[in-house]
Length: 470
Ligand SMILES: NC(=O)c1ccc[n+]([C@@H]2O[C@H](COP(=O)([O-])OP(=O)(O)OC[C@H]3O[C@@H](n4cnc5c(N)ncnc54)[C@H](O)[C@@H]3O)[C@@H](O)[C@H]2O)c1
Image 1: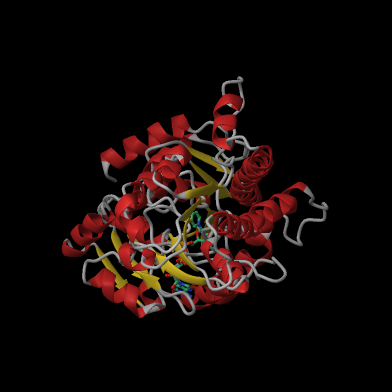
Image 2: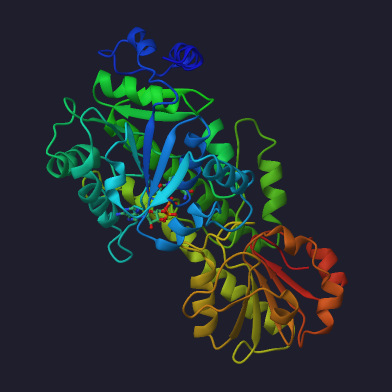
C-alpha cells in the first residue's frame, strides 16, 4: 500500500464532516487505499465529465482506459488530443502527457473494462424535450455493455446526474442483471455526481468538494479511496438517494436564482432602470446574493436537472421549480423581441433584416452548445422574418445553424448585432470599424458585455436584457 495515498485517505477521513450514515464507521477507511500503481480504471463516456476525470486519474499513476461510442473522440484521445474545444486550462496538456506516458488510452470496446478495479460511468442523462421525463438510454446501454465484463470486487461509480430513486430503482438492478453479480457482495456501487462546469473542468474536478453516495461500508471505503486520489477538497459521504437529491437540487437552486434575476431584469427594463446596478445595490444588503440575468440558460445540466429533481418518481406537486424553468426559457424570446425593438428604433423592420448573432455556445469561451439559448432565439428571429448570421469563435456548425468564424463577415451588411454569449473576444471588438460595414446600427446585449452609454456614443441604438433605454 502506498504510504502517501494512505496518509491522504486518513487525512481525508478526518476531514469528512457531514457524515449521515451512522452505521458506517470511519476508522477502517484508512485500510482501504489500493496501491497507486496497480489501480486500473475504466471511464465510460469521454465527454466534458469523463475526459478530465480520465486524465486526472491517470495523472495519479493509475492505468486508465476511456471507453466511448464516438470514434472521433477515441481517435483524438489516442492521438493525445482533447476532443473538447474552447478554453479548458490544463486539459490539452494533461491528455497529451498522460497518453504519452502510456497511462491513458481510449477504446470503443467495453471489454477493455474487464480488468478495471474502478469503473466510472459518465454518460449523458438528458430529459425528453416534450415530457421533461428523464431519458436513460445512454446509461442503460453503457451498463448493459460494460456490465458483463466487470470483475468481482470492482467499484462502479455513477458520476452521471440522476433523478432521485434511480440508483435503487434502475442502476442497481440493471447492473446486477448485466453483470450477473450482486451489488454489495461481488460489486461495489456508489453515486458520486460530478459538479464541474465547462471552462473550468480540471480545476473543479480537483478543487470542489464532492458528495459520495454509498449504501454500504465496503462501497464507501472503496469510493473514498478512489476519489481521494485526485479530489483535494472534502468528500461528504451519504446514501445514494441523498446524493441524487443533492446534485439535482443544487442545479435546481441555481436555476431558480437565475430566474429571479431574470424576472427582476424584465421589471427593470419596463421601468427603465439598470438591473445590473439594481443587483449591485441589492447585494449591499446582508445575506442577499442576487445572480446576474441574461439571454437564457443553457448547457447539459441546469436546464434539465431541475426536471430530474421533480421527475415522476416524486409525488409532491412542484410549482416553483417548473415556473423558474418557464421564466428562463422565455429569455431567448425576450432577446428576439429586443432585436425587433432595437431595429425599429434604428429605422428598420425585422422582416428581411440581417441580424448578426454573436455567440452560439451557451457558455463563454467554450464550444458547448447543448441547450444553448442561441437556438430558440434564432428560431424566433427567423419566425419574425430576420435573416440570421451566426458567429462563434469555438462552437461548430450544426444542421440549420451555420457558424461563421470571421466576425467581420458576420457583421457585414448586418442591421443589428445580438450578443448571446460573453466570449472574451466580443469585449474587445473594434465596434467603430465594424460599424462601417453594417447597414443599420443596433446592438442588443444579452450578457452585459458593453456599457450602454459608450455604445450609444458610437452611434448605435442599444438595448439589452435588464437595461433601460439610453
Ligand atoms: N457537462 C457538465 O458540465 C456536467 C457537470 C456535472 C454533471 N454532468 C453530468 O455528467 C453526465 C455526463 O455529462 P457530459 O457533459 O460529460 O456529457 P457528454 O455528452 O459531453 O459526454 C457523454 C459521453 O458519453 C458517451 N457515451 C454515450 N453512451 C455511451 C456508451 N454506451 N458507452 C460509452 N460511451 C457512451 C458519449 O459519446 C459522450 O462522449 C451527465 O449526466 C451530466 O448531467 C455534466
